[in-house]
Image 1: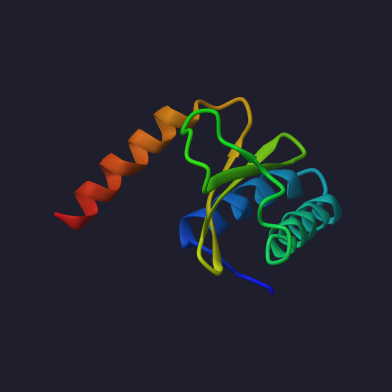
Image 2: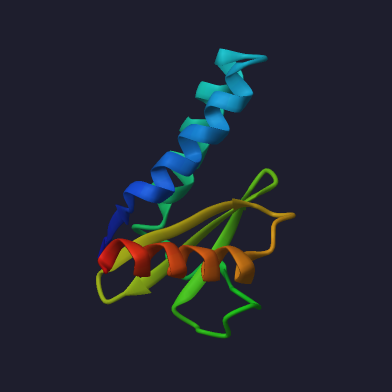
Length: 109
């Protein structure tokens, strides 16, 4: 049975930022990159368990797939797959997550 794949607005804007950077040199490759990311995310509707669990979190519901040098981070909850992160593989995931948490706390207050 197929699961639903949902993106957060923040994660989609991360992909757009990467695409904008690539487009400075090649709009063609930027569009191809976005298509590749979308296709991989769509495949999670049928193959959500194929990614590895994140070593930083140790939560079996949070997984990742690599798209070139980027980490597509997602969480499987019931019949829905949530894309919760898209970051360059060289960045410190735990630090970014903490910064995100702090900025979200400020927005809620």
